Image (tube, rainbow, N blue to C red; front, side):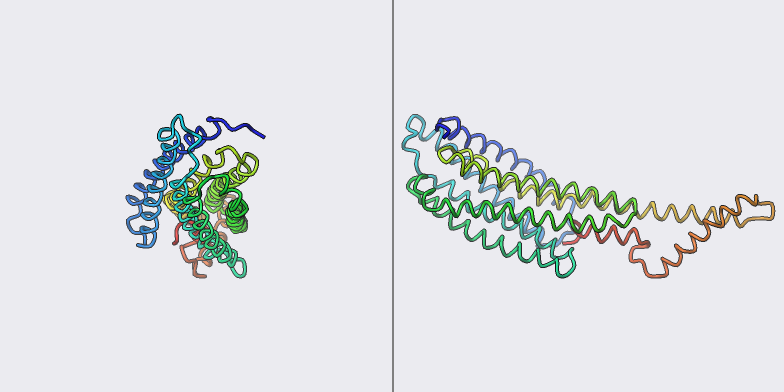
Length: 332
C-alpha cells in the first residue's frame, strides 16, 4: 500500500484545483464565443449554457476553497483535517453538471438514430438522471461526514457504482454516435466524408476523455484509498463534461462551413458540366473525339437534372447527406 504523504493528499487536491481553474477559464471563453456566434439559437440552449456556466463557477469556488482549507487553514495541523463540506457541495454541483451534459448528448442520439436504436438515448438519459440523484445523495453524505474514512466505509460501494455507471453511459453514447456516423460515411460523397471524419474525431475525443477520466477516478479511489489522488482527478471531471458541451455547440460553425463548401462545390461542378456539354453540342466544326467525350458528360448532366426533379431537399443528394449528418451538431 502506498504511504500517505502531503504530496499524494493535499498536493493532489491542489493540482486538481489548479487544473479545474484552468478548464473553467477555457469554458468561459467558449461560453463567450457561443453567445456571440449563435444569437439565433433557441432560448433553451442559451439557458442551458448559462446554467452550466453558473454551476461551474460555483463548482470551481468550492473546489478551490476546499484546497485552501487543507493547505492554509489546517497548515501544520493536518491531522485535524477530517471533514470536507465544500468537497461535498462540489460533488453535488458536479453531478448536476454531468447529468445536464449527458442528457444533452442523449437527446442527440434520440434525434439522430432510427427506431429502435434511438431508445439507446432514452435509456442512457434515464440512467444519467438516476445517477445524478444518487450523486446528490453521496454529495450530501460527504458534506456532513465526520471523517473521510467513515465515509468510504459506508458509501464507498455507491461511489464506485456511480463512477462506473458514468463511464459506461459515456461509452454507450459515443458508440451510438459512431455507429450512426459510420453508416452515413458510406455515402461516398467527398463533402460528406469530410464532415463525417470531423464528427468522428470529435466524438472519439470527447467520449474517450470523459470515460478515461471517470475510470481513472474509480481506479485511484479503489487502489489508493488513503491518498486523495482520486479527489484531485474528480475535481476537474465536471469541467471536461461542460467543455465537451460547449465544444459541441461551437463546432457547428465549422460544420456549417463544410456544408456550405460542399453545396458550392456541387453547384460549381454542375455549372462546369453544363458549359462543357454546351461546347460539345456546338457548331459543325467541333472535334468529333471531343464531341464523343462530352456526350458522356451530357448523360451525367441529364441524370443530375433527374435527381433535382426527384425533390432533393437541399439541391443534391450529397447535400441531403450533409444536412442529415450535421443534425448531430446543428439541430437542437
